[in-house]
Length: 65
Picture 1 (cartoon, rainbow, N blue to C red):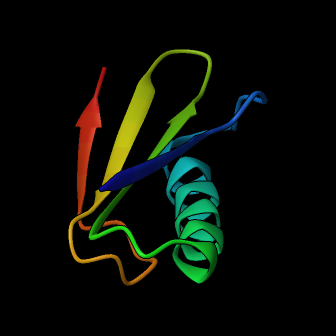
Picture 2 (spheres, rainbow, N blue to C red; picture 1 turned 30 degrees about the vertical axis):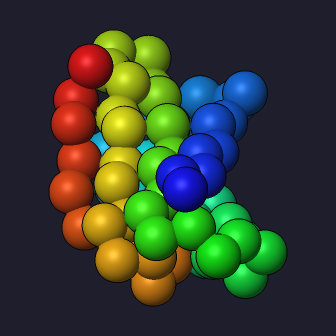
């Protein structure tokens, strides 16, 4: 099973996106037994899909879309 989270508010830059993703992944991890978690965050230029591959609440990889 995979769980995901996305933000409806843009962030300032990549660093803020990573911080927001880790907060969302931690919240998902606290309420989910999923083995893999995803969080989508975006700024004015890019979208970032963060993947928590081991469900520890910390983004392990990032795909810029």
